Image (cartoon, rainbow over all chains, first blue to last red; front, side):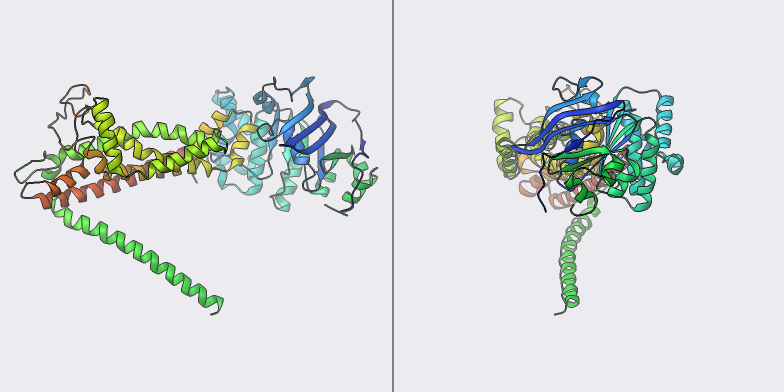
Length: 264
Length: 295
């Protein structure tokens, strides 16, 4: 692979309301420096895509945003959410994760019924009213475009669903907590093209209420659904701009080579 | 040989080995049950044993075995569950947990007669517990712990990490994730551990001879007060179990029908273990279904 000047970057700050931003975020696995000075701002009610080759640090970065890396890595720098640095040790991480939900690469529904998958965390958070829970199940399944397929057997095991349905259930489970921001880590990589198309539709509709940050390997997917795109390379954010700009007139050589398929 | 032939030969060898295992099992089970069944009668199951004359039953021994099993599980299961959760969910991989795991392995390879004598010196003599169900249950806990800890840890470990991540990402605490998601998913494995250890408890004799004792005093099955000395629930009374009884009538028994008593008692022992096995599995499946919505 050609080597690029990793300090040559082009990063814009969106001219819109910002839902979440990081300032000089650094991630260390032991002594291994795997993310350097990532400073990005994510616009509210938009989809932002994080692209880059394997090992570029995009997933590591994403998982830092709701403190999922706490146990395995050291994260330095600021993550600003509603004027608070949520990377501070003083912040209640459990509360952070209720505001910033996450959906993973492999669908990971609990070994419970569809209904319990959605209500388990709600009950743990203190919601016990049956009516409210029922409503929350219905509305989140509708938002995740799964309701019509499962409404008649909500008490069936979630493991009996197809991969694509399981992933939409995981999205429903995350949005049932009524988060502000949804982080998705390559949510479609284990799905077939039809399920992927459904998932993308679902995500687009979700921007009415949620800010979405999605890691993806699939550049077509990034260009189809996102308004902003960040390109990661070897633990550095190289370029961040409107998605059209990234794919049509990138400013940096590395980005240009990546989006035209020269590496990755 | 062509790959096709190799495959056939390998398959046949494996089938043969399985057949040998199954045959040995069937032979043992069949022999014990066929030679024991004729001696089992309602009278045999419901009358007390006799020391000298023929016609004694195994009522007290059977009950003692069951009671001892329950008591042992009551003591050992919570301990094992806690230790297993610690090892699988909280502890890192360092010298300390390595030491714990080694200690557990050593514990599981202790000969039962050593555990029995140790229990005799410590619980029966030093702690003044006497020959009692409690002493027996504590000694058996020593046996049970390694097996239970290992099997529970294994089944917790088999639950994919993605399940833990899913819980944590929803803002759940570690403990809530373990209790509500990981434990239910691990239930079938945990149950297998309990069943295996229960079988061992049921069949154990050597460790009990020195701790729970070899006598089965007449107890009153209508006295539900566990602190009364003649209550069947009193954990401080000596209690000969079925396995110990079988050993005793065969070594020092003077009853004329010792052979038929031990044959009958062995069959009962096997049947009870089978019933426990299937029962526990049925209950477990039911629970698992309720907790997971089937499948």
